Image (cartoon, rainbow, N blue to C red; front, side):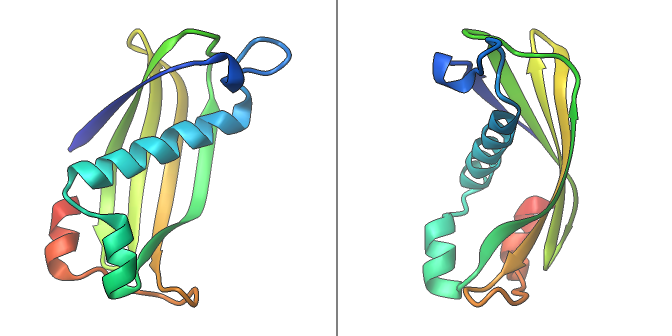
Length: 129
């Protein structure tokens, strides 16, 4: 499964050089992950409230290939690489006009409110497979 989420670069996303500030790519991919989970029919607020489960970023490996600039139209492509009851591994690419400009591999852990390991229920895990 590949999820596509469009985003436009706004002035506030750029730095003094007029290019997207490096940390903002992490915001872009976070938003895309949230939209993917929502599109899978998972309400993250309800998941926390009813089962005390949240997704936490465990690891990010990022590769900045080319700069994005003000008013660029980008697409974040999110692919689920592996899913287990306690971990999701994703690739997230930011594309501009079909060209890869940023690539990330992200590992999410499922944790409870105390920071301990929490397992996704099988019916929810199946949505990621």
